[in-house]
Every structure is written in C-alpha cells, then in structure tokens.
Length: 110
Image (cartoon, rainbow, N blue to C red; front, side):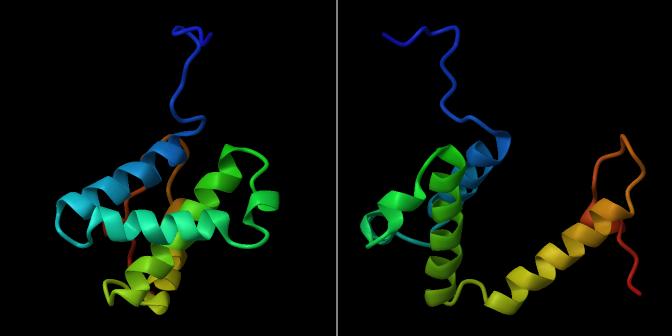
C-alpha cells in the first residue's frame, strides 16, 4: 500500500513541468490528446524502449523527445527553434547571478 504522506506523482520538478506543458499545449488546441497518446505509446513500446526505461527520468526523457518530434511533425515547432531556445536558456542561466531567477527576456543580444 502506498503511504499517502510519501506519495509523489512526479519524482522531479521537470517531470511535472513537461507533463504540464503537454497538457497546456493540448488545452490550447495545438494537438488532439488521442493523437499524442498514440504517438507516445508507440515511442514507449518501440523496440528497445523498454530497456531504456530504468527510472522516471528515462520515461520523461522519452516523453520530451517524443513531444519535440510530435510538435515538429505537426509543424508547431522546428528543430532549429528548439536548439536556439536551449542555447538562449543556457546563456541566460550562465549569466544570471546566483540566487536570482533565470529570465530569458533579460538576455542581451550579442
């Protein structure tokens, strides 16, 4: 039996965040949940995936990679946009003083 005091639906904040982003995108009409479920289910059951999932991080990494491809295939985001976002995020993170929130809007263009 699961101890309710110890139960955590997500083991890491980023697990909850990627789940919430996916739900938000669906609620905003960017895709149909049934379509997403089929694609994600196929990714989970694809040859070799079951051996890749050792812990929750592995599960949510497959979720993230599948979501990126799913949105790309639907024309919602392009791979170069994802790369640019991560480069911008990294630069903002590295240039943010310790203890301050990271803010992409405050990143000055070089």
